[in-house]
Length: 138
Image 1 (tube, rainbow, N blue to C red):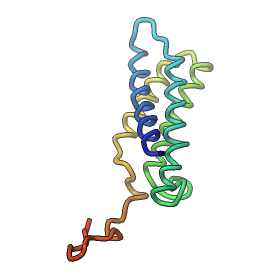
Image 2 (cartoon, rainbow, N blue to C red):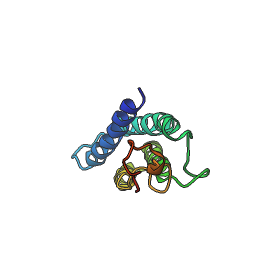
Image 3 (spheres, rainbow, N blue to C red):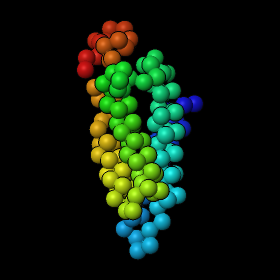
């Protein structure tokens, strides 16, 4: 019941991030609502459902900084911080376009990092194998 909303919402956040980044290139861009939607989806998908998924899979809510080195948790935090900065720039900056583009690029780069790299990964050696079959080795 957690994996489907987590995957759907986080992918929507990534899609909205890209869409919002492209919005700045329109003749009369209106990226305010898109910025807040992107931030909202990333928060709910990554910082709400992500830790719940992590708890079910690995019995820990957060294994990124400062508690560990899991890049999935860290990259989610970086993506959310980037869009928080873009959202603040909408109100405070004279040129929020730069912040929106930067946040979209950050999310694009961050999600190129493989999931669970340097952190919580399935330990295949602990899986039970069928009788007589050799135990899988990664």
